[in-house]
Image 1 (cartoon, rainbow, N blue to C red):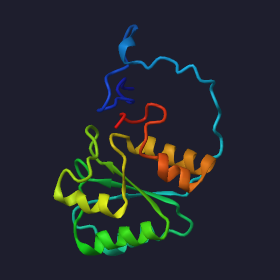
Image 2 (cartoon, rainbow, N blue to C red):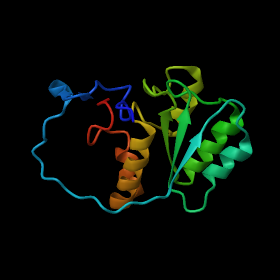
Image 3 (cartoon, helix red, strand yellow):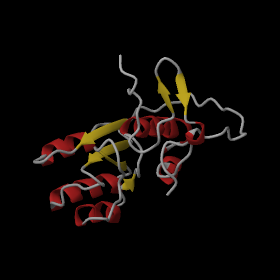
Length: 171
């Protein structure tokens, strides 16, 4: 019922819908000129770990230990902050060392992950957690599923933090 269902806190409004639709042409990316390619192989071996104050070790280990999982998106606080307790960092590091891809996205509707900006996110960068910059959770899930399904985990690890189709700011 509302016209703001697809609002993005990190990008200008593309159009305003009312009696008529007013397009913000300057904010709409022009066609790249590349032919459209259908990517239809999805890998749903992706999980989400939403952090909250007081999250326990068992909760974290349960999500990171899901059988067959290849990637976990951690929803962190603000600009990418997470608990700095050694058990938390050690759980993530062990998962990464075993081959799990971990992507850091913010729970905030606007803003972006800047790992290392504050002390509580430095350890994440040091152990190999990948910054999701300003990607939304929904875009991160979709991007991981497509990249894992089409190209495998090594390609995904190398490209998940890169803007491929306008899903995140160029950093």
